[in-house]
Length: 192
Image (cartoon, rainbow, N blue to C red):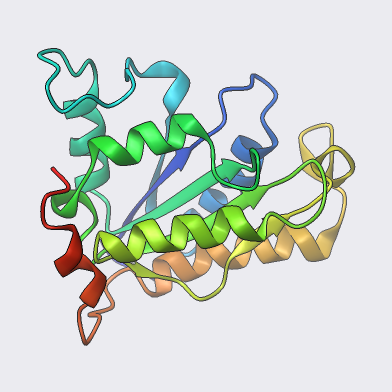
């Protein structure tokens, strides 16, 4: 059992009936069963304009940063758009930086209407490395999402278990101490 581990999930889908959100809820349920407190950040509920470093009003960016910074582990979930992750998730990540991600454990989940959303996962992994986060090697890819769910639940038990494993590993590795630090982070000093 994990004591005092807090897992925060960011849902990069704005759809009402989001398969990404459904999958993240399954992962968070598994994290909760492993003893963690959990929180799902629904980006639909936040006022986040496209990131502009010169903007005076950042909307709910401070609230987002506080929530992400409070996490011991972070789950990033996205639908795949044009071979990458979604613009709402990109905007949320642009408002965050080292204060929120450095040395944090991050789990990745991607959903696609077609084949495997591998490139979306690769792109998120690169962003997390640039922020000096430790990305769980296990990741959850959900292809053909329209066939993967029925009535808000997974149809395939193996796929559901893959997502639950991501939630459990977020708790298991929440306090890992990466060594050595990611060298990519030194290239991203001006991120905020």
